[in-house]
Length: 233
View 1 (spheres, rainbow, N blue to C red):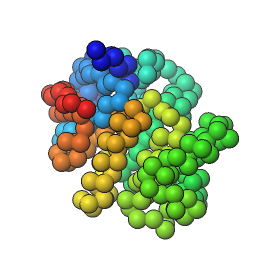
View 2 (cartoon, helix red, strand yellow; view 1 turned 180 degrees about the vertical axis):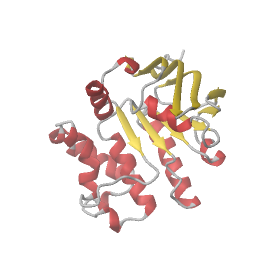
View 3 (cartoon, rainbow, N blue to C red; view 1 turned 45 degrees about the horizontal axis):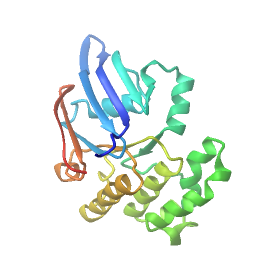
View 4 (cartoon, one colour; view 1 turned 180 degrees about the horizontal axis):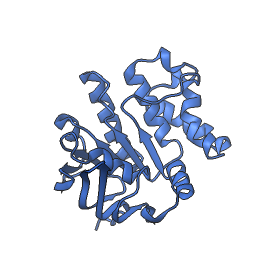
């Protein structure tokens, strides 16, 4: 009998509204879902449907107006700003569309950055080396971002998101700035990581082809979760 996997992230009745003058916009409307450890979840939906807000709330960058948010068993919807900062540094990894690498740091230094922020750089060397090898960039350790291709920069960003062994990795349109060939390579890499490292990814994407790489698919429209189903991982 397969052992039940722990829940990596959970929304319970989460709602979020924004007000621009007299105009009220509902970004999340009573959203509930569970993502288990090792899942590669893809979140799809039209622009303005709530995808980015969902990711921001899940990453502790924004707070819900109602409902409960859990990451790795922690009820993050009730944490203060200092506690949320610690959560993002220790428990969450981020992968962005435009890579967000530090241009004056080498590949190796960029990967080690989360550990430096956590004051744990002395324990990072071995893990960073393994990740560099895993993403196929061992020969680029001393290169700077400007010397890399877009696909290589995203591989560095993915390695950086893993170096502090977070409970959850949030990927915001990770292939949106890549051509189709490199985008496919990145998606395959992320899927392999979720299996080989038992890492949990939540990826926001506009691309249906990208979404099919996930074993768990969520669709959000007008702030409501309209689809929630999984496939064999």
